[in-house]
Length: 318
Ligand SMILES: *[C@@H]1O[C@H](CO)[C@@H](O)[C@H](O)[C@H]1NC(C)=O
Ligand SMILES: *[C@@H]1O[C@H](CO)[C@@H](O)[C@H](O)[C@H]1NC(C)=O
Ligand SMILES: *[C@@H]1O[C@H](CO)[C@@H](O)[C@H](O)[C@H]1NC(C)=O
Ligand SMILES: *[C@@H]1O[C@H](CO)[C@@H](O)[C@H](O)[C@H]1NC(C)=O
Ligand SMILES: *[C@@H]1O[C@H](CO)[C@@H](O)[C@H](O)[C@H]1NC(C)=O
Image 1 (cartoon, rainbow, N blue to C red):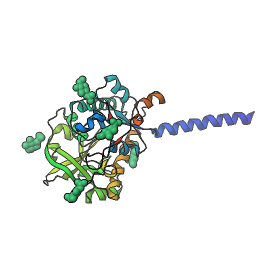
Image 2 (image 1 turned 90 degrees about the vertical axis):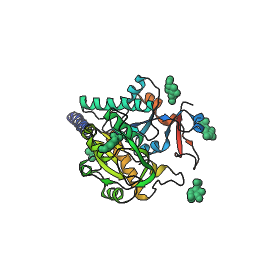
Image 3 (image 1 turned 60 degrees about the vertical axis):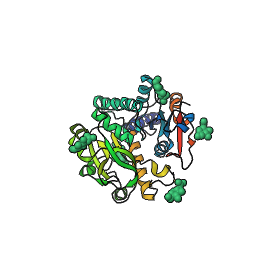
Image 4 (image 1 turned 180 degrees about the vertical axis):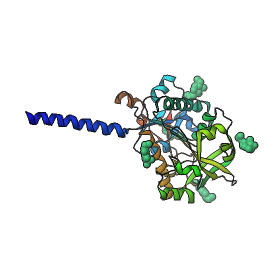
């Protein structure tokens, strides 16, 4: 009898200790990341679907131990708000700017800031290329922040600013080997026709208060542009370059770096962001509800080696 009681107490104590540990680390081991879709770029692809996500972004996220939800265009506000409250972060991918993309990105951006300000709970956002540019527009509340820039189809190294050392993205969690690659080898793929110059960034009180400029890069005219940034306060990160292309895009005669070091750079960036989303504990109400939104109900299409920037694409709205 005594032994039984003792065992019961022991079990209760242990489960309490376990709860405490769980609560302290509070890590979401089932993160789900949303990726924005956008209008299909080429007419010949439109029969496949009017909006798309490049499969490289999906693989980039999946390889870090996160699942993907496509964020569809032209949906109700209830749909977007349900996703905001059910997933753990969002990735704004590269592409061609559209009103609808900006509208949807704005919803997640505003809700992420509001939630952090009111409850300190994070909803991480990562912007790549167009996504980086859209972050600048959303923060500046203006579409007039960029200038034309010769930045299309070249690879470059990054120059770290003094702020990089005490940043989350490029600070103490960045392995020194990855830092060495970023600073000394052309590991970053660039595909942009617009950019923001470092002086425009630092002279803008709104942008320079909101973001730290972490790296700059030279464009094809050897003029510098801001290539990496993170928010000073919020879990918001942006790269003008394309970390998702290194391992997953193989169109011939492009400048995408496929070296071992470039792959290490890519994997660091991807792992970094998913690690941020593990701090968000949202989940869908049920596995059935989760399954309605996960990307598995769609199948990526192979696009041919030489005709598309994207090896494989997910299409929506056939
Ligand atoms: C997508 O388009 C390609 C041609 O571009 C075609 O071969 C393929 O069957 C299409 N897939 C679907 C699901 O319509
Ligand atoms: C979204 O809706 C607008 C207006 O209803 C329409 O013009 C546009 O083609 C739709 N876009 C997509 C991707 O379905
Ligand atoms: C960037 O700054 C320069 C000079 O400081 C200015 O002439 C230019 O218009 C600015 N660019 C943008 C996009 O605001
Ligand atoms: C790639 O570039 C080389 C050299 O310019 C050219 O000979 C080759 O045809 C190109 N390949 C494709 C698939 O465009
Ligand atoms: C992962 O995120 C946690 C919480 O933000 C942080 O303490 C830790 O340093 C991160 N690890 C890496 C490798 O970024």
